[in-house]
Length: 96
Image 1: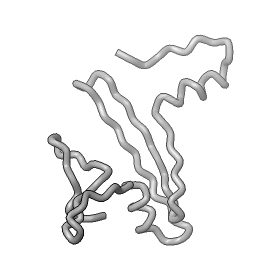
Image 2 (image 1 turned 180 degrees about the vertical axis):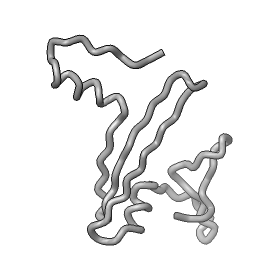
Image 3 (image 1 turned 135 degrees about the vertical axis):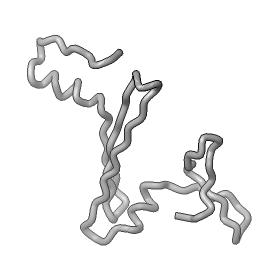
Image 4 (image 1 turned 30 degrees about the vertical axis):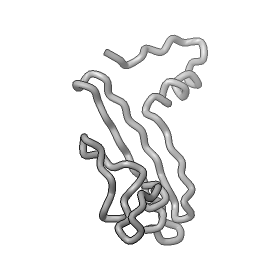
């Protein structure tokens, strides 16, 4: 990744960076940039969580291989998977 990454007001990275050599803003993909760092056969897994005032927790995971193929899932996927355990049963949501 370029060391001149564009930051938001909150200090978060964006999907673009400034290229001082050309003077242009370049679109980038963190997943694809990470894939470039991997050896053939390697997989990188990223797990992220966030929250709002420690009340609403959400999270997701994704993995990328050296070919740039990406798979991911959201923390709420458990509800769909839980339905398979008892299709007619009621599932209690974990929320505030």
